[in-house]
Each structure stands twice: as structure tokens, then as C-alpha cells.
Image (cartoon, rainbow, N blue to C red; front, side):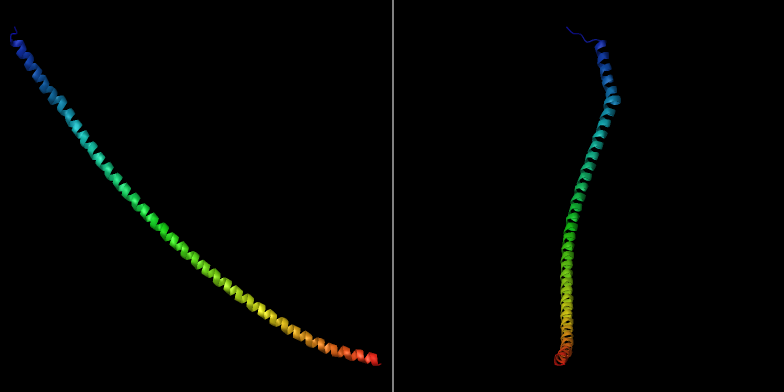
Length: 138
């Protein structure tokens, strides 16, 4: 049978002292380091999630502002195009009025010139008729 002697007690005590020393100088510091690492990882994960959320919020805000700016630009462009079209129509109207005025003035000048030429021709006709009559009768 098994007998309990002093060697067994010494080995038992040495094993427990070794376990205590290993726990005190190896396992506890390793567990502290692991706990610190886990807390750092948790903090980094939290910071990363917060930064990601802030980035997503910023992207959404910028996209919203960009959409609004595009809508404003489109509205402004349409306003400018409408104003340009109106200015073009006014300019065309002014040009047509000026054209009509010039045509009317040219017609008036042509009519006046025609009247003057008719009166000159009538005067010349009388002079020529008198000369023809004089030559025929002489």
C-alpha cells in the first residue's frame, strides 16, 4: 500500500509554492496585460465605430448639401435661360422694329425719289415735246 512520507508532503508543498509563484509572477501579469489589451481593443473598436458613424453622417450631410446645391444651380440655370430667352425675344423685337422702320423710311425715300423723277421727267417731256414740235414745224 501507499504510505505517506515526508517526500510526498515536501513535493506537495513545492508544487503549491510553484503554483503560487507562477500565478503571482506569470499568470497575473499576463492576465493584466490581456485585460489591458482587451480594454484597448474595445476602446479602439468604440472609437472606430464612432469615427465611422461620424464619417457616414458627414457623407450624408455633404450629399444632402450637394443635392441642394445641384437643385439651386438647376433653378438658377433655368432662370438665367428664361431671362436670356426673354432678352433674345426683346432684341429680336427691337431688330424687327428697326428693320420695319428702315424699310418704311426706304420706301418713303423711294416714293419721294420717284415723285421727283416723275416731275423731272414731266418737265423734260415738255421741253423735249417743245423741241420736237419746233423741229417738226421748222
